[in-house]
Amino acid sequence: MSTLSDLVYAQGRSSEEDVEWLHRLAGDGQLLADLASADIVLWVPTSDDSFVAVAHTRPSGAATLFYRDIVGDRVRPQWRTQVREAFQTGVIVDSASPDWFEETPTRVRAVPVARKQGGALQAIGVVTRHTNLGEARTPSRQQITFNECADDLFGMIASGDFPDLSAPTSPRRGAPRASDGLVRLDVDGITTFASPNALSAFNRLGFEDELEGESLVEVVTQILPTKRQFDESLPVVVTGRAPWRADLEARGVTVSLRTIPLRDHGTRIGAILLCRDVTEIRHQEQELITKDATIREIHHRVKNNLQTVASLLRIQARRSHSDEARDALTQAMRRVSAIAVVHDTLSEGLAQNVDFDEVFARVLKLVAEVAAAPNTRARTHSTGRFGTLPSEYATPLALALTELVTNAVEHGLAGQEGDVEIIADRTDDRLEVRVRDTGSGLPEGQVGRGLGTQIVRTLIQGELGGTIDWHTIMGSGTEVTIDIPLRYIERSQG
Image 1: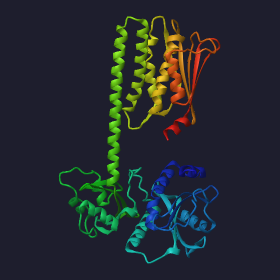
Image 2: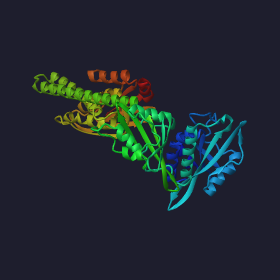
Image 3: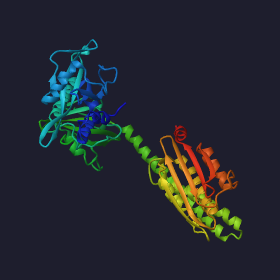
């Protein structure tokens, strides 16, 4: 399915600022649908004087009219005139009589989506509210208040006061919804309505009286522990003066708050405060943070231990009197150091994925000592991008490439000057890496039988499910090609 941005840009009539405005509005589609107990559809104009739906939200506490998603559909004939009038006049247009949709009586309201540009209002779309009249019943006080809040927000949409781009984006997990708890504040911050769920949330925080008629600032002041730090944005939120979010913590309970100031043509008339008990969610988030910190510390300690092992191997190699033993210890040191590089990278971030381009740049430095061997002068350079890889695959690939580059320098360019080039080619479903040197090359069809070759085969074929091939380039130099299916990696992760 196309995204909102794709659908809007496809019409060729909206700027980047318009798209951002529409994105913000669509993000509050669930709030509008729940307050209005109706389906909410966002339309943008097309080049042929019609409209196309770019977002659709169903109410969570009422029956939907549209059992199939209508995003991407053009406006239906019975709504076209009403939607066009709202867009052209900038005025909210209600249906004159019940509109029948698939044998269900409905009431449709078309609200122009206005944005202030250069001091003037310009319509960039239309929101339609589709209310199911087939399930109409005597509304409760909560439903009446919710509808009033919805009407206030629709008026703000038409006057360019909602959404507010200064409000924080990308709410944290557990963002409050209307059904979680809603408090209506007047212009002085006095509570004029509190839903049962909102009252329950404040009761759990320690407030035992009724919220209605109380100053919310004074209520929160009673709740907050006297010697405990609190969210600095909390005063702004509970007064209803700015569109912001904050957490209120007391008695081991955490309630997430979101304020939406209500305005009538720019004049503040009150606010909506949404609240939700997110105690368990915050505990889970804290546990995840602790877990991530622990994992980073483990990677850091493993890296330190591996570097200690590598240092011991280096010392032992220098003191060895046997060339064969010295070479074996040096190779072991280099392999341990390559693994340490991956753990060092993992210790620096929360994600268990690795930017392998950064890892490989550090791995290349491990062959510097080999490249500086007597009578050998090797120049290494890398092209292409490896991209991000899961940590469990970064280690074997780093170790395998260390072996291949080392072999290219030690054996391919032994006693001569030349180049070693590493070429990475990544697509959506595969990663191909070629290690090419300008040395003397291998007899065609022959591959080394040493420990390094065995290690590379085991890592690439066994752990990464890939293939590896050695061949001579035009009789001069050797090229090793590694092919790793990325789908294999994704499947193994799952």
